[in-house]
Length: 289
Image 1 (spheres, helix red, strand yellow):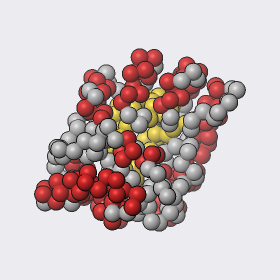
Image 2 (cartoon, one colour):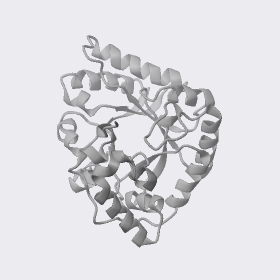
Image 3 (cartoon, one colour):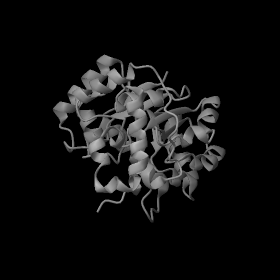
Image 4 (cartoon, one colour):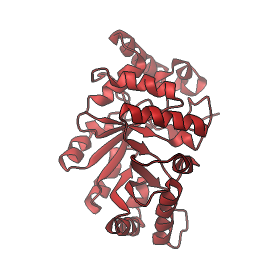
């Protein structure tokens, strides 16, 4: 069964369209970490791009956690790609106040697909050879990125979206293929930044173009007799090939609600798949007025 991992974007940024609290204060972060550790969550997912997230974690202390971080996208016109990658890893280790880290992901898959890919991966491998990194992976928006990346680089971890509206990673066959090749699959976006569990948010003008789709999801969820939260978690839990499910929360109370949902049986939500509509399933494409 997949294990929960704690996403930390809102520890350093006012992350997520449903986020009403802004960036979480360090005391609240400490409370969340305490609840997570007590519940047996062992992995923290962070990134250089998450504002002060890594510094906050480093100040609180991350001893005993499995740490996954991401290097930011290569800056346009960067003349020293290896140097840039090296500085990014050094920032990760410095901010988290650790001597090594379990996994470093390339945050933008296009960086590996593009002309800088070989230099990026080669530099990360040097850190791995020096035992400062245990695993190298990539964060993707969709499975189409994997054809090129997997043929060029021996990646060990893939982070990808998966939720009741977006089953592309499974439908494409890549979830099975990655698992068969012993590549870890970490899943994010199971709540689609909270959209799937907030009917109030669904009713805002931004999401009116997808009213029928979201209503179909609500009807299916209601018919199950379970909450939207439970159904979202149960759906992703039903994919045995998933290693980690990354969940971000705004408070210790919210984390307890997710933990309660995670204790429910796995159950696939069938009849929904909007994988062809990236304007809905990819939050970076949401156009806010």
